[in-house]
Length: 379
Image (tube, rainbow, N blue to C red):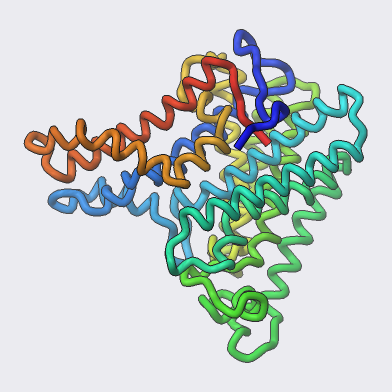
């Protein structure tokens, strides 16, 4: 498929332009680095180490989604990615408006972009999903959710901060009340798998529930991640000292974590339902993670060529689609003749780990090759 010229952008990496912050690419790159790592099967291998080594088991579990109530490291992947996508929207559309583009033309671009994201999500679902996957799993995946959320967030871009916060609170409050007050027998248990309003809605819409107990209604509360990203993008773009911005990020993140933990007294943190406590807690952690990235990249002078994460952060969509549509398996077939030759020294498990690491490295190498040639494939 030919790639339209407007989807390929070149940047001057001798110095970052004011409409692109290294901290945003660093944050996005770390998140995507971990997400594509899952495609190498490395995290699954960590669940079965020789001798059941506790450290490997602990790391492996952190990269397996929580079965229901709880929060593991991999559970933050989708919230973090949507959050930083919202921050990027602020820089992207303000750049367009500064060039004289109208709100209408940029809104049409937003709709086009959302359509592409949804199409990529749909295509990836049909390429990579197993036989147990349902349409519910499609609508609960990251690209379709980001497509819908980006349109809603765009409509709030020029609105005051108080309206963005009110919209986020309203979204979480409405979904919380719907789950708690839904009166249909058999689906009136808000936080029980398959017995809640989200499951009722999916049964009516699709005639089947997800075996993973996710619900398509997640597309609504997940909008909060992007809206919060828009808020933080506005913060980073405005005039002011870097220290003040860092303190705001730390303060907002700390408040989010404290509030999210407090909400656990009322509502369990369930990623598969995007409950209010989970969304608030994940958003607070996203603010804190971005604060760390901002301190490293903007205040400590992290060089644009000093980390592979920046290279991955420039081509997240490309490497995500490549890794999950069979690219990681293809690279694995290239790596295996070399890595498995060490089986006599490393054992079967060690050689499989080496294969995964080589695949991971090759995918990062693709990003770095594009990065050095100043090519960014975007939507």
